[in-house]
Image 1 (tube, each protein chain N blue to C red):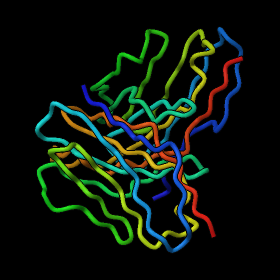
Image 2 (spheres, each protein chain N blue to C red):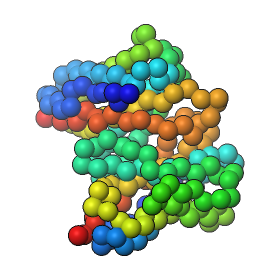
Image 3 (cartoon, rainbow over the protein chains, first blue to last red):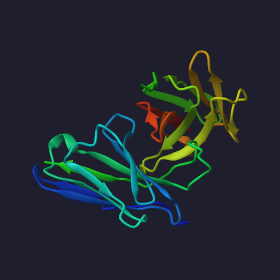
Length: 117
Length: 113
């Protein structure tokens, strides 16, 4: 168990640029989640995958945001035409598939801190 | 809609003492789950304890326990014998009706030696 890995740890970009973050979940974890955390707030749910299928998306995930998990392993989160309001920490989490239980423990990565100038 | 409220932005406790962090929530779901997560400066969220709403018995994990008052929609976290390593942000979260967790704004816990 090497933990959930997120890259890069920090990203500074100029407004209008595109950025992509990567998340490598714990091996054999079927479920993968993206959350966003702004300063002074708790994490907010963005989207969730079971294997390669994106099963739930928050209304927070505007058209500029896209997430993929093409082979059911790692995932990428891309933000197009970044805005200053996108500055936040983007957290990835994974969990093993249970018997329909929703209370499974989530294993979080250390996040990618995005700063949009 | 689910909401989670943590009314204490900051709390402090002396090492070896006991501290209680408050959390209230609102949900229309009959089947839901409640969690406390810890976020140290490393930023990695770590599950502290979880409670199934259908269970009346309060969950405990070593020095951590909860006081779950379902009718009052209250879910407080008690940390006994506080240690310096307990210093962190603590987030209360609710999950019901979907896969997403809804988090509160967090409570910053300081442990004084």
